[in-house]
Amino acid sequence: MSFRTGALLGLAFFLAGCGGGGSSSSGKHRVGLVFDLGGRGDKSFNDSAYEGVARAAKELGIEFDYIEPGDGADREAALRQLASSKDELIFGVGFLFTDDIALVAKDFPNKKFGCIDFAVNPNSKMPDNLVALKFREHEGSFLVGAIAGLVSKTNAVGFVGGMDIPLIHKFEAGFAAGAKAVNPKVKVLTGYAGVTGEAFKNPAKGKAISYSQIGQGADVIFHASGTTGLGVFEAAREKKIFAIGVDADQFSEAPGFILTSMLKRGDVAVYKTIEALLTGRFKSGVQEFGLAEGGVGYVYDANNKSLIPEAVVKRVEELKAKIVKGEIKVPAS
Image (cartoon, rainbow, N blue to C red; front, side, top):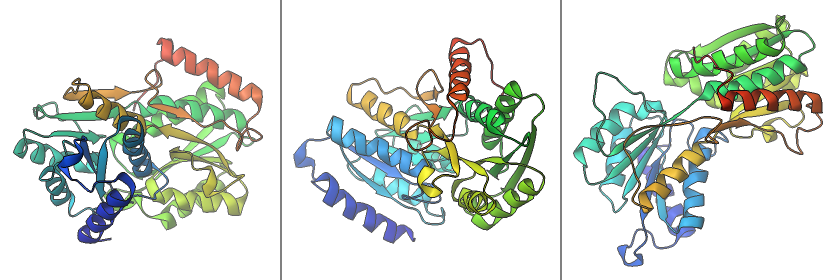
């Protein structure tokens, strides 16, 4: 989808769903959102961020619009378009926005900006109007790793990452630590789809990596790879093994084969940032969300209850409590 098309569709939705279409006469606060690769409808991190602004519209009375930047080449232009509008707070979804949003924030000092997974550079000062929304993904990944280690019948589990970068290494490290904490005999197989942003939207590569891991005995595979994970789910269905979703509840992608999903609550981070803006508590710098803050977790509900024994859930909840109390330190790399 091109930037222009995405902008038009985003504005059209805003007009229909939020009422007002940007008229300042309403007196409502305005928020803008620019999606990452995959866009709205990825049933993952982009959708989670959207849920945050949608909840704020319902509960806090804001108005919002959004833009899908297509292949990502227009991130800066999209941010500038929203910053030039009446939007007071503009979000970029994903670490790929880091350089662009820092630049735009400097050029629009009277606006506020939030970036999910902003890559903080210790040698560079962040703009005073920008908040980096970070997550302790390794904590949530530890819990689904523990589920995988306890459920596996082959003592082999897999991890499929998207882009081979430190952010995704956190998912891998937590997952491996959780699996081995409950099952010292388990073997953790890992694979990455690539070294560019394209690695997050390559289902064929995700399926190929999964097939390789299944061939080595893996009967549970966790992915942190955007829409590349759709290939993981397809492999799980075909080979009758379990997959673990990421960011949002992905059970509907392969009912009966999604053991659980590691929740990365972009919606919580976005909502709380909007709430802080409205109450005059917006703070720049880094804000981190882990298990204690409700920023990460795992899915256990009516859909997957029959797939996870109660004894496994009890063990995982015990581990969760220890992480929150600081009794377990989950490795991030």
